[in-house]
Structure formats: C-alpha cells, structure tokens
Length: 128
Figure 1 (cartoon, rainbow, N blue to C red):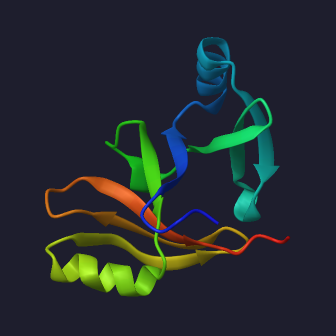
Figure 2 (spheres, one colour):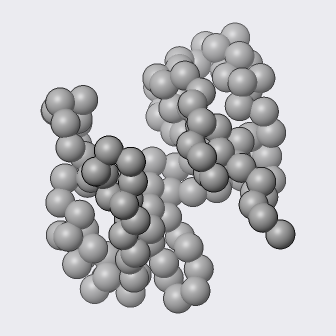
C-alpha cells in the first residue's frame, strides 16, 4: 500500500478517450486496458511497460458541463474520514464526501485552503 502522504494514483478526465489514448500512446509510449464498470461505464487503466501509472475516465454527463479536461492526483492517507475532518478544520473544502470503491479504497474529492483540488484516498488492502 502507498504510504500516507504520498501520491498514489493519477487519473485523466477526458471527453474523448480514444483521442487521449492515441496522444499518450504516441507521445509517452503508454498502453491501455479497458474495464467495463457498473452502469455501462468503461474505465481505462494506463500502463507503461509492466507498471500501472494511472487511469482514464470519460467525462460524460451534465455534471461535467463547462469543466475542462484535466488530470486528478490522488494522495494516499491513513484514515480518510479523520483526514477530511482535519481538512475542514484547516479551511479546506470537501467537494465529494468520502465514498467507497470496491477493491480500490475509500475516496474523497477535496480542495485545499487555496482551492487546489485533489483526491484523497485510503487505498484498499491488496491481496498478497
């Protein structure tokens, strides 16, 4: 598991997954694997050689109107609920309260006291 306070995962939010695959495949040599998700969504994992380096999600729906394509960095924390409480006490803002993603972990989308957005997560324990 990633140590508390370290960057754990990066995720590209894009409107055109294939265009992004083509761009990053040609410029960085990345490879991609698509995974069907509940509700008909597809999540794309990004690999560089044998290493997982991130994921990609299509921005589809009214919640993304007016939002530019962007990368989200996820930071590992030891206890997401405790850390979100501390974030609020220090002037941060919770954009999405902690939620569970099976096999991935517990995640919250937050903004720091200056408005910079990131995801904080307590990664799920991995088998082995």
